[in-house]
Image 1 (tube, rainbow, N blue to C red):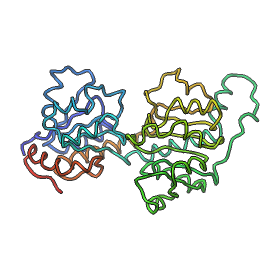
Image 2 (image 1 turned 30 degrees about the horizontal axis):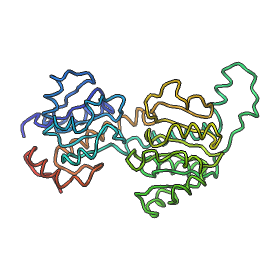
Image 3 (image 1 turned 90 degrees about the horizontal axis):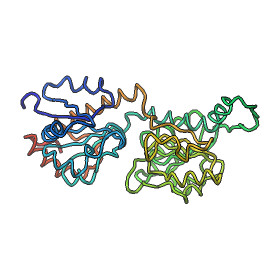
Image 4 (image 1 turned 45 degrees about the vertical axis):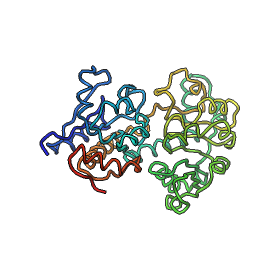
Length: 351
C-alpha cells in the first residue's frame, strides 16, 4: 500500500496528542488529519470522504452534532471503517447506525480505570467524613459547631457497584483491600463467578440499593441503563447511604435525585457526570451542601490521558492493519464489516 494511504482524522482534541501521535508517527502509511469544531464545509467534506478511522471525542458538548457519528455524517464517509471514541463512553456515536453501515465502533475502556476509580473513592471518603461541607462552612467565618459535621468510618461498610467492569472492579478492589468492605454488584453482563473474581457478590439492583452504604455507578450509557436510577430506585436506598456516579449523565434522573435529597431519603451524593456538562452554576443539585460536584474530570489525570492516547492509537493501527480490535462495541457487525473492509482497503481482515 502506498505511503499515507490510510487516513485517520479527529476533531479538536485527542486523549493525549503526544502519546497518540508518537504511536501513529512511526507509520509512514498513515496520515492524521485534524478538524476544528467550526471548520468550514469545504475543509470538512474532503477529509470525511477519504477517512478510514474517525478518532472522536466522547463529549456531546464538545463535538457538535454535525461532526458526531450519525446517519447524516456516515452518508459523507464512504470509506470509513471504524469510529473510535477517545474514552470509555461513546455518547457521540450512533452505534446502531454504524452497525447498519458495516462500521466498527470501539472505545478505550480500561485506559483510565485507575483514575476514575480513585476519583470515586475520593468522593466516598470526602462525603463520609463530610469534608466539603465542613470546608464550605469554615470559609464563611461563622462559628463552627463541630457536632454538625460528625462523619462515618468506611471500615466494614457495604459498597454497591452498578457495573463491575474495569472501573467498578478496580473500585471494589480498593475498597475491599483498604477498608474491608463488603462488595455487592449489579451487572447483568457478568455471571456470579465472574463477579466473585472481582471480589463481589452478584445481586439484583433492588437488593443492592437496599443493603448498600454507598451506591457507585460504573456502567455504560445504553438504552437499558438510561434513567436506571430514578425516583423508585432512590427510594429503595437507605437514608444514611450515599450515591456516587462517575459513569455518564442520563443514567441517573437528576430531578429524582434532587427530590430524594430534599426529602432526606439519602445522605448525599458525589456527581462527576451530568446531562449538561459542565453543569450550570444554578443547577438544582448545586444547592445541596451534601452534594459533592466535579465537572466530568474523574478520568482526567496525566497518566490516564497518556494511557488512553496510546491505546487509542494502537487500536486504530490494529483496525487499519486488518486485525480485530480488542474493544469492539458492536461485535455483531464483524461479518459485514469484513466484506466492507476488503472492498475499501483491498485485503481481507482477520476473522
